Length: 192
Image (cartoon, rainbow, N blue to C red; front, top):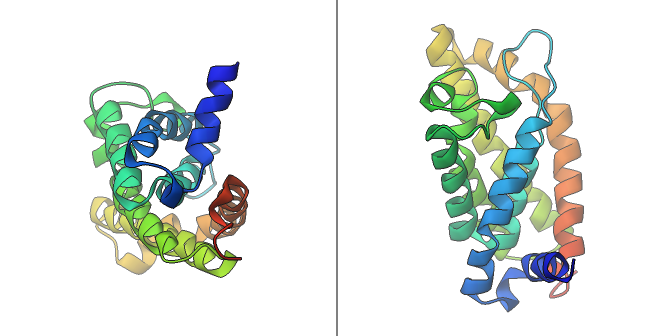
């Protein structure tokens, strides 16, 4: 129990005050959290893409670990899924998931974690973090809509109607939750 508590304490310590080694040690935790978030998948009518909690952990990983380590955590997650571990939504695995309707979202995870972490490193206030989460969400939704457009040979506006609009309410909730998690982690102590 103490080991878990110490791991969580180290993981949630603000990135600027932790060594790179301590943050790197937290990469597996964010890989696992993203995989668990994938299992919390809820289908939406009218779109082949489910709502999951993956994106919350993608963005939080960038904000807490920083841009490079957050992106590394998400690249590791994708590599594990591509190699056959059932870490994608609903227990999916393999390269087919990266090439299917959800693949654009998944492939965008490292870039989204990077962007979120890069913006979040510039300041730790509520607005800065919210902006970081919004930009990270834009990266994910853009990747998803682009791949849907390619797979369905439809205009990007149609793909956005299927792959972006249904997810906007959830994105607002995840942004608020993510900002609160990062603020509770102590990232807000330097400037409020």
